[in-house]
Length: 175
Image (cartoon, rainbow, N blue to C red; front, side, top):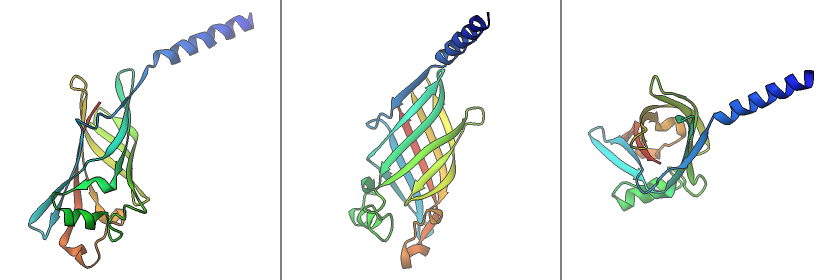
């Protein structure tokens, strides 16, 4: 009799686990974007994008449950080739030593529209909270945040004081 009860509970447990449907999608990089904005000289703004990135979005029971992304530093584009070369150089992002920026979600709170996760730049990992707007019908996620570039060792030598510390991040994820 005990083995029958054990088998019954085991099969029920297995069916419950099977009901939790996990679906994973690759980020559609042709329709997604990673943008940033930082002040320069206190009166100007520098806008830019990263043009080479990849990632995955996961859903459990049709609810957003995980997000991870990897951005290639060398793909930075600010519409100024000289500035872009400087940004990927050893003195700033150091793209040779640190070729990627990575994000990994840890907790998604749909009710408060927040994603808690870890952002890694130049092998410095810091917690980050992203504001979240999710459209299931459009299959898109918009994420915004502000980070302190100095927290990630993004310092610019003698020019450091000319660049604002706060970087605004705006990401559109299509899947």
